[in-house]
Image (cartoon, rainbow, N blue to C red; front, side, top):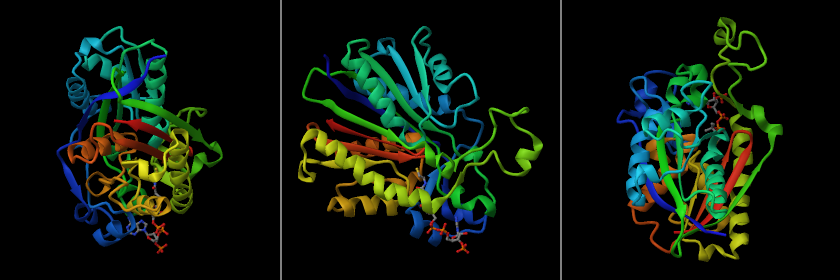
Length: 330
Ligand code: COA
C-alpha cells in the first residue's frame, strides 16, 4: 500500500465583491441581520457567464504548480460541484478540455457541501492502491446565477458565494499523509435543503409553470439544517480524532465547511477550544458549498495556521444530508 498526501493547492474566486449592503438594494434584508445570523460580510459572485470549469481552471494550474508536477503528470480529474455548466456532461469534462488533457479520466461527484472531502477520500483510495500517482481534485461552485435574488429567496440567497479550490493529491514520500477519511449521510433529510427542478422524472423536465413556482431555486429549512449541522460537525471531528487516537490537544487546526459562523462557533464550543483552532473565512466568501473547504485550507496555509507536520481535521456537512471528515498530517 502507498500513502497519499495533499501535494499542492490553488484557489480562484471571482473579482466581483458583493457586500451585504449590495444585497440590501436587491431584497428586504440588512447587513446586521446577515452578519449576526451568519457571520458573512461579503461574497464573490461572477459578473459574466462563467462556467464552473472556467472558474476552476486558474485554481487547478496553481495547484499543479504548487505540487511541483506538470499538467501531463495528472492521471485523474475529480470535480465536486452542484453547479455544473449543464446537466450533462459533467464539469470535469469541460475542465479536462481547458487543461488540454484528453484521455485522462474525469469524474464529477455531487455530494453538495461534503463533496470536497468525499473527493479526497476517493483520491486517497486510488493513490493508496497504486492505481494513480497524481490526482487533481477540485471543489467549485457558481451559485450566484441560480439564486432567487428577491425578498422571497433571501434566506438562501444571502448565504451562497462563488469560488474554486483545487488540490493535487499525490503519492507521499515523506511524513505528510491523508491519514484517514470518514463518510456518511442520511437521505431521509434530502428535501430539507434541495433544488427540485429540473425534475428528472417529468416531461418536460423544466416548464414555465415550474419556473413561475420557483422550483428551480434552492430551498432550505434553515432551522432543521442548523439543528443537524451543530450535532453532526462535532461527531465527524471526533470520528477522525478517534481513528488517529488524537485528543483535541493533538489537533493543530480544524477546517470545517463554511456554512455559518454560528455553526462554527458551536463546533468550537463543543470541542472545548477557541476559534483560533477552528478555521473560518466565511466573512469574505459566504458558503461556497464544495469549494469552501479547499478555499479555507488555502487561506489557512497562507496565514501560516497550517505548517509542515500540522495535524489537521477537515469536517463537512451538507445537503443530502451528507457528512465527511478527514485527518491529515500536513
Ligand atoms: N434577511 C432578513 N431577514 C431574513 C432573512 C434575510 N436574509 N432571511 C430570513 N429572514 C427572516 C425570516 O423571514 C424570519 O422572519 P419572521 O420572524 O418575521 O418570520 C426571521 O428572519 C427569522 O428567520 P429564521 O429562519 O428563524 O432565522 P434563523 O435564526 O434560523 O437564521 C439561517 C436563518 C438560514 C441563517 C439559519 O437557519 C441557518 O444558518 N441555517 C443553516 C443554514 C446552513 O448552514 N445551510 C447550509 C448548510 S451546508
